[in-house]
Structure formats: C-alpha cells, structure tokens
Length: 88
Image 1 (tube, rainbow, N blue to C red):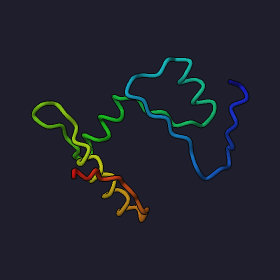
Image 2 (cartoon, rainbow, N blue to C red):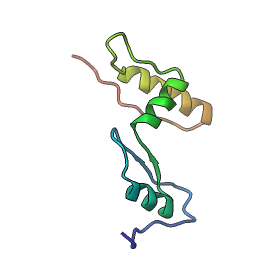
Image 3 (spheres, rainbow, N blue to C red):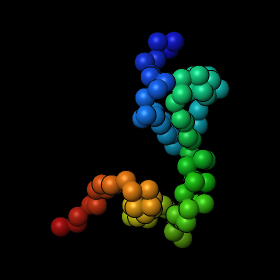
C-alpha cells in the first residue's frame, strides 16, 4: 500500500469510518497517509457527546442522526442533503 494515491495539499480529506475496530497496521497506514479513521467507539462517543442518544431498546434513531447532521451543517454553513425515507 505504499502507492496510496493521496495528495497532501488537497483541501478535501479522506475519512474512513467502521463499525468495528482497526488493526495496528491499519492505524499505522492511516497515520502515514493522512487518512482520518474513526472506529465504533469514537463514533459512539462523538454522537453521545453531542446529544444523539439511543432509545430504551438500545437502538440509535436514524432520524436523530440526520437531525444532528443537519444541525452541524447549519452551524458550519455547509448545505447538507440527507435522505429522509418516505413511508407510503
């Protein structure tokens, strides 16, 4: 993976999320290539720290996550487009 084609001066960054965890080699590769990685523990902490909670059954509400993303986008001036499922 030494030829991972990332541009260090590109204003867009690479973000890799997983619901699992990263191996030591994956962390080393990401750190060396500028890829931002977040595992499930960090994702859960980020959401909980920002008021996105699970319900009584331990389930994360997709609507709660979308609402949080929309709030973040409004605060930063970024236009967020989230797909809201329509039950017909």
